[in-house]
Image 1: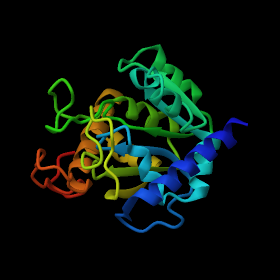
Image 2: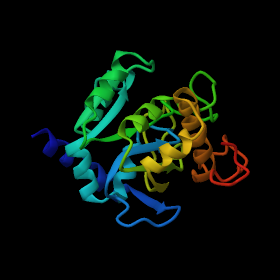
Image 3: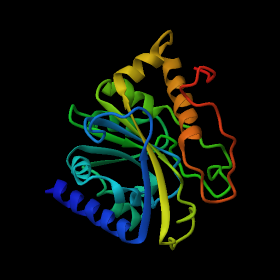
Image 4: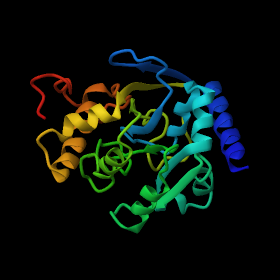
Length: 248
């Protein structure tokens, strides 16, 4: 029953998104057959707003059904604890696990929820970017190491990396009313998890593997994310993450 409720919720979000927003969604990298299939991990980079479910406006229905049947989403306890927003986010996937921002029992509960059919959806930066391009504590937006735990646990299938163009032109954290009739942008990249893991593990220990994942995803984010629609964050174009000049 829960799967049907979640699927209905996702279809409603998609419909509202299609009505009120334009979507610029493109795949990047080498073309892969059936890019929405065999996805075990979705990594969403450049977290700027709680309104990010509007990106579902161009997501195929069969992928939404997969989220409803097998999706596992770690969600911040602060978000889940909100009276209205928290109730909404509890129904964006089959299993929504409330976590702190620490490597504690709540995080290990996420790992225990993963089974061979699961598709994990994670926002690995762990907090939202404010209008000044930093988090609420004034720190740079970095990727945290939990995503490496998931990659190391899943080990096969595909990873879909979603590079968000940001939603500060729709809603900046702290604002209550979103702006409508805007264009939202996202770039998608499909990567084989086994090959990705093997490439980063080469000549590395488990601990340096985690650091390598974090640095690689930050490099990919800074290269592939479409520019934010606010003038407050400007960043120079880094090396392409697969360039021979990019650091390993």
